[in-house]
Image (cartoon, rainbow over all chains, first blue to last red; front, top):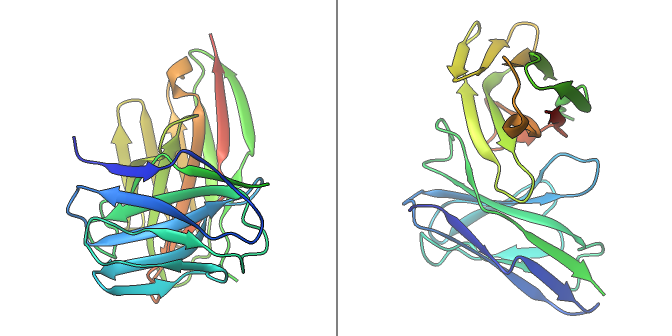
Length: 114
Length: 112
């Protein structure tokens, strides 16, 4: 079955450490996205990518980095510069950047800083 | 700052009741409006993508309407069932951007 796989489901990080969240899709979608969810807020866009080797900052990119070396993969690194990293992270993809058929989402990674 | 408002924040209904929620968005430079259903411990699932003023879409007992001139969309659920319990998200996109802006969602609980 086609879909998006995010791993791990839960991640604990010590302060000062970088961590990488995995996102893989087998839908042959061109566009991929990373969103962050905090209590009481809508999903906020961190980074997005339209094609391999190209990505754009979203609304809250500070303290995060991404890469898009393969069409299927869009990993997100939460760096030590991110001041408040504890959150729920969702990866999504769409056929193209217009998203006219909607987004397909992964099941998320919950990151906790300890 | 572009903002999406969803109301109500949460809703509790009995099985068999029909219900509706509202999504409000800025009406200028409209491009598309998305609705998603997000069940607990699952991934958000696309319900509808609407682009034209006056659009009406239907999927089983769920339907949605769109008014881009006044900046709102309604989602209706006819004869709610316990399996309809979820958070319903709307998101809109303006012409000049590549980004979807999400509302905070309406959390629906349907009691048997």
